Amino acid sequence: MHDESQTRRLAGEFEHLYEIYEARIYRVIRAIVLDAAAAEDLTRKTFERAFREQQNGKRTSSARVALHRVAVDTAISHTRRQNLTGLLLRRLRARGKGAAAAPASTATRALGALSPELRAVAVLHLCGRMTSDEMAAILGTRPSGVDSRIGTAMQIMGQALNGMDGQHGNAGG
Amino acid sequence: MGNTAMRGVKAVADDDRDRFDFPWAKVIRNEIETWQPSRRLEVNLECRPAPAHPDWRLAALVVGTLALILNFAVATRSVDPRQWWEAAQTVVRQLVQPAPPGHLSGPSRAAVMGTDPYQHVSGGASAGGPGSTASTVRSAAEGQSGSSPTVGLSVATGPGAGTNSGQGVEVTSNPRGRGGMTGSIGEGPAHASGTIDGAGMRGCMGAYGPTGRGSNICGSVNSPVTAPVPPLPAPVVPDAAPTPP
Image 1 (cartoon, chains in turn orange, green):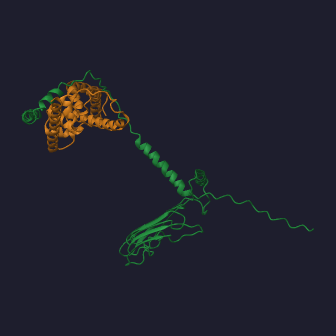
Image 2 (tube, rainbow over the protein chains, first blue to last red; image 1 turned 135 degrees about the horizontal axis):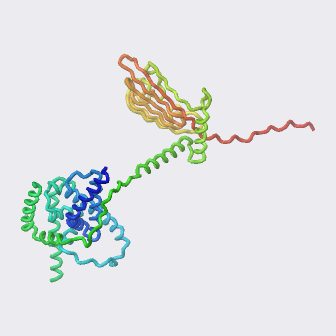
Image 3 (cartoon, one colour; image 1 turned 120 degrees about the horizontal axis):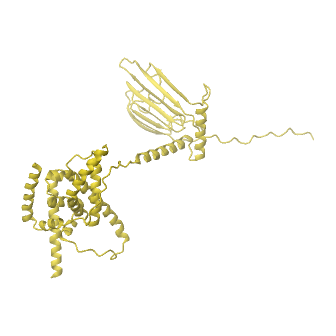
């Protein structure tokens, strides 16, 4: 357990990490949950959880990898909970009464076709600039598994974008 | 430094691959990189102790309560909490005011040690009938007593099982028509047997060497928890002698 001065020093370090990684962590989380407001809340929770892990001496990897690992875990757990809640609410909610959905951007459409786990792989691949080993440490898998998941994610996203372009083209024509 | 170089090499390779295989990847990457939090997020970085998980305490409480209820129900053979209360009172009374020595209904503990491996064979760890092999299941176990109908079950397996031999494994429920269970395991150099019922627990374990010398250790704990006795009927007063007319 850390004493008061160590905690203060650790908090200072985390402030610095926060300055560097806030936007990156926010992007990773938002790409997984596909919800801007929830991503802000989860980004805050990610830094708090990573700080507590560091305080309790649980962190074993670099700060960058540890932060991304906590972010991915937090975002995937949130998405699973939301999916479960959505399943329950869908039965109660009348059709057509939901808020009109904003037109989805290209990234949202492509990522929306993936499972939360594949979204994590895709966003780390596209924006994380990480090695396979680092991604494997974040995702809790082997580097060979990471490459295979990246291939799957890219393929699904490509199909989703091509299919939607085809639909739009047909509708327009 | 090496990691950074690796990342640089990988980024270039990824960019090349994406440019040819997935031309839309650059669009998505550029879009994601425009995502920013709408406001400065307030992160609470203060020293907080990890929240304690009281789950194990709750689990222990639930399991303890269930065990207590089950114990009372078995000991009193009733689901009436009033009878449980009576039984608990009886036990507490006997613990607080121990019965005089020699009183049969008082709580007792005993241990017997012998040098003969077959000296103490209660519970079924006896030897006999070597060479026979059997596996039996009997209902209405032996040794029932009393006039009320009881149901018992005996399961035995191994050589000589069911013929008074404890070789192998034998389990008998309701052995004497008083509930409970008796079991034995092993025969020969190491063996053990035990009985648990409403009157308490008894058990033996023994071992002997190739020369036949060995010893048994037996013990018993008697907890006289019995069902409350129903009140006696009102005394019958004999009619007075007939008066002479």
